[in-house]
Image (cartoon, rainbow, N blue to C red):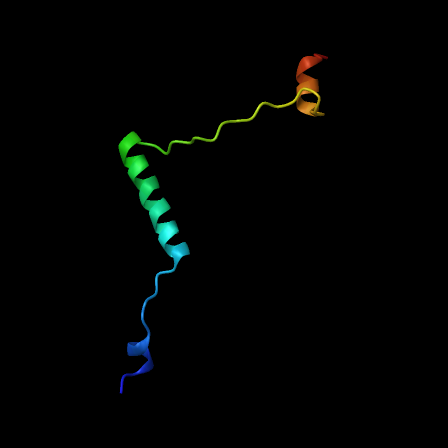
Length: 61
């Protein structure tokens, strides 16, 4: 009979596969461009939203 350690088998789940795939794509991107490329853009900030820092910049004291 085999021991318990020999009976255990490595199982790759779908989550593990996706994580490895993303990591490989990111490393490939860094290798190609020399740095990580971000596709996320900064959204336009509404002027109606309360922003204390912007108000301080607009009104010089």
